[in-house]
Length: 105
Image 1 (cartoon, rainbow, N blue to C red):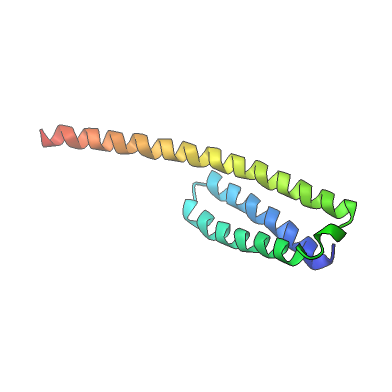
Image 2: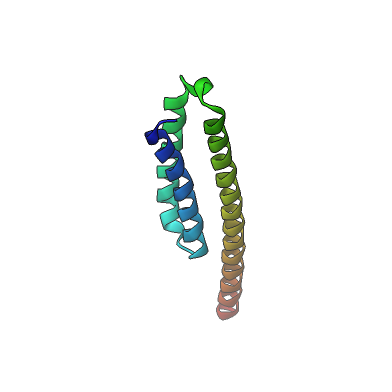
């Protein structure tokens, strides 16, 4: 795999890790921007690789596989954090509505 391909693969993983860091810091707005960037990057990587994917060395295939596994693990953690945030917002909304209902009556 050439240096540019290797850089793209590393960036894919770095962006994913940055998204997780932002989720842990509760910065959900920025995550959406990074997701768009990450999606374009990985699409570009595989579109460019499509014609020569069969020609990847065993080592390169292993690197692609490991990167994808790492990103899937990060995505799983992101999903868990998003679900926790969703539950938290839902509870706050219910409490807010309950308090509003009491004030109205």
